Amino acid sequence: MPSSEIILNPDLSVYHLHLKNGEVPRKVVTVGDPDRLDWLIPHFDQVYSDQQFREFRSLRGRIGQEDMLCISTGIGTDNIDIVLNELHLAYAWDLSKREPRSEALPPLQVLRLGTSGTLREDIPIESILMSEAALGFDYLMHFYNWSDFRKLEGLDAFPQPYFTWGSEALRSQFRPMAQHSGITVTANGFYGPQGRNVPLKAKKDKWLEILAVQDLEALAITNLEMETAGIYALGSLLNMECLSLSAILANRRTQVFSKKPETIVKGMIAQALEIYSAE
Image (cartoon, rainbow, N blue to C red; front, side):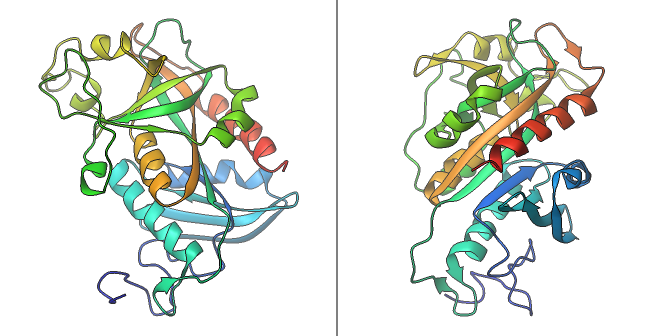
């Protein structure tokens, strides 16, 4: 593979994440904010390394008998494209040869621990929501061989979003800690793309209301954030098992925001890492 297509650093680490062969265990946790990794460190029995390049901070260590890599992705599916592709390269390719490894490896597992706003009045803030599936209103999967795009009623003025499922195995594993579940909408921005009308007015009136009343695959559309659909869709093409859990910090319908967001997110992290490290 040409060096222009798989760009490596002088130490043979992948270009953005600075991870080398042997530094990506099977179990990976992603968060958005690099500083949020500080909330994961107390749960580790041993920390092997902690490095940061741009918004990508990587924490490698062990919890119980499980090696884990925790990595910050920053915001948005443009960064997810970098993170998942480079994780796959460091895990499943021989970087010295720039070619796939000859031996078969078990699927990489990627657990997103994030925050989100719900679109439904019956989902309270400060609860934990599991994304059974996701709809991507960003453009990431238009650049890959993805075929499952959905037409939603009342949204003809928008590109058709791509539809994707989370890992069935991980959904089953983490279902006991999820108080709610449904379809997560992934937006390509925080203000207009999420229906906020300040400082500029969003294009589509009642955008959130239109999303909230739709069902797909017998599931309700429940919440809105900026990474999950990209993780699920791209991860499936890269032979990864992916799951997204969100602490619900805002209810966009009742227009309330949590008064204790740090407490809620830390509680979610503690529960999720206990489950993730149990196998």
